[in-house]
Length: 150
Image 1: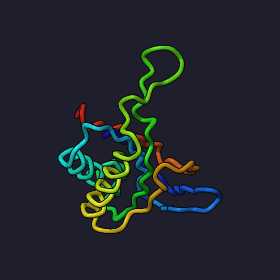
Image 2: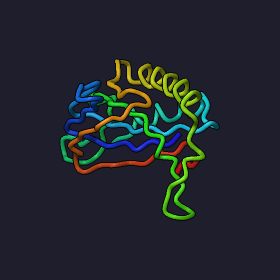
Image 3: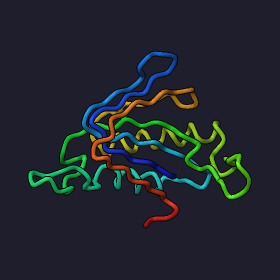
């Protein structure tokens, strides 16, 4: 699994002009899924997202986690996170799971993340043409790959 995690002052996702999810003061998580992803990837990634100390403490130092802050998560599926740009100018998405497989894993990850966070998430619509709006706070943007745990 590959995630782009952005600390946001506010964020929303809409489909066809209708808002399907919105948050303030939390994390926008763009999620890419590949066939090799399993429950251990989901559990590790969910724990990493909610426990990363990327929110400011009283001294203005990034030392507070989303769990400690009580913030929210907006989760949006994004297969293009697995784009390969090695050859030519048209990205290849061969590593991204096909929709039938990805939606099952996306739903499973959503349940794992909800459980670890301890409250419901806001979400986009899997496979839809979505418009995402955000005010990146900081800006703080972290890329996490469960296959390359740096």
